[in-house]
Image (cartoon, rainbow, N blue to C red; front, side, top):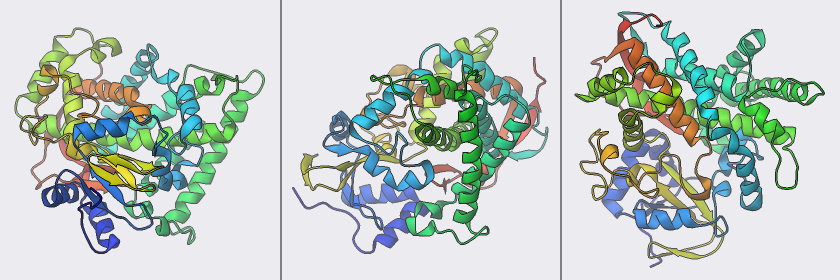
Length: 443
């Protein structure tokens, strides 16, 4: 078949729906047009949306020849740089993955884990007992500190505090949803969003390039942080990454790893506090594990199930895609070169034939069954699966364990909680308002 169903009319209308209510828009399109449908956003290729696991598997199986993920992400190059692993395809992408993956694997996670727990403690120490807090802001603080310490390798001190302050301002500006639209990225001076973002980005770049020069210099201090490991990494030809490459990868890790993790933690708290029995079972598991350290926390099955179920029900990013480099047949449709083959994480992870009672938050489903990479893929799939997946899952577990150990939090009855866009991510409305019922001192 060549006739693809989907919304007709102005692409601006699709853009408005996509920016303001992406989950509802995807649900409506599936209800009206079925499993496979299209929509078109201004200045972007027509996107064909799939959610059937059999079709998702086909898209993820492509080795990067007929379908390019870098081209699909190209609109983000203004944020991340054109040398980011998310922007490139083919051999350049495979080279970057091989260089970037080792620091995010194996026993290194355990070393990062204690820092994550300590940084969570610092934020928890400031929780005001009896008061209401927007928890996303607190989770954002933890996630940013984790990146500055574990990824960038900055030790506590004036330099670290200055970088953290600049990055926090930059990230807050760049989460303004209209900046996803290319024609909104116009520098109109220091009072415009894009103008302020560009000035802060240049300031952060100066600090990062200065740090790279200092560490590469003879006798430059190296540590076990991810940046130090990436500076020393060499490809198959013995070449290291250039400063420009490292800069783009660091910004990618910052943008992709900060807001996404903070939002994922916020959704996890939303669901575990709202669902009867979940918090109690999780507290019981933590209490029965003995003295908690990163290795024991990582191994807790119900905590892992809570994290995965939250990512299933409310994926941080609703879809991932590829740009077709040739005419292909996918899911029974003949698609033309230049179109986007897009897998909807949101729709695929709510299919009733895969997930019993898909609208229900039920972590036990991940204890009873192992889902395939085409059924559960909150971090994407195939050769484009997020490099920081293990790091993000690990961080979520460390922070949630600390929160449950030291606090009791309560949802505030202030109306419905709905997804609100912050750039590419979707967070709970109002930053999820929680009342701090109890805060224990550090043990």
